[in-house]
Image (tube, rainbow, N blue to C red; front, side, top):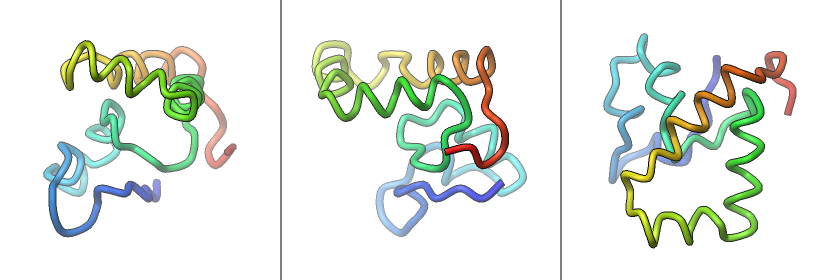
Length: 86
């Protein structure tokens, strides 16, 4: 699985970037910064929330520990897309 996360570069690192390469897909599963191809319904909901400003509002109220990554991963597992269907 090729991941094109904006945080896989020098500078501030997300949990996925700090993971061992073999564990990268699992770390990206709950990462709020994932920007790769849509893996399931959770990624679609996250993109809509980001585009409409809902994600920023939730983070402003709840902070970084809002649980968005876990909900995104749960929706992706419940309604997965085929590989590369973005």
